[in-house]
Amino acid sequence: MSSLLLRGFVLGLAVAASPGPIFFLCVRRTLVGGRLAGLLSGFGVATVDGFYAAIATFGVAALTTAFVAGRRPLAVVGGAVLVGLGVRIVLERARTESTSAATGRGLAWAYLSTVGLTITNPATIISFAALAATLGLGTSGSLVRPALVVAGVLLGSAAWWGILVLAASLLRARLTPRVVRGISTGSGLAIALLGILAVLSAFSG
Image (cartoon, rainbow, N blue to C red; front, top):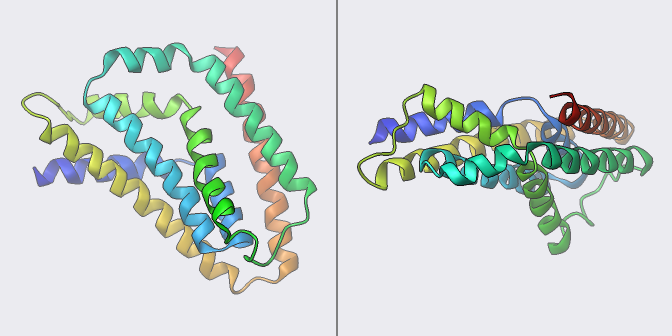
């Protein structure tokens, strides 16, 4: 049983560590808004990773098929939101203090926004379905086995985002406001570019 938890942990860590727009978003939010804003952003991703892992490991074929079939509209919506978010980040003056981001509304937005962005990325569930099959994460026999896998995925994904945010927060203390603004602008450009690529990919397949 412990091996299933470990496999799930490795799977969650591997999927979460894949480079993407949320990486830049979490780093930017940590540098600008503080550690808690970054952690909640990352945990929003981990929540969706666990959700998609549950669909894949419990063998919910109908839901998997529905998400894969809706890949294009989801990619367009998610990509458009990323472009808008990236442009907004580039245009706004990066804050260097965490006072406004520490409010309940700001923290809730940090979590919910990454949940929304991640759930519109159907590549995530495809990754989990493929890796679950490759690693032999069978779900027959009882509900305990897939539950352990899902728990491992949640822990693995959360661990990655925790490490990333911790590293970014340690870096934050050593950076000047000017450098933070530069990184924030660069992150916005990267997010917008990845959003454009997501939209283009929806029409290329």
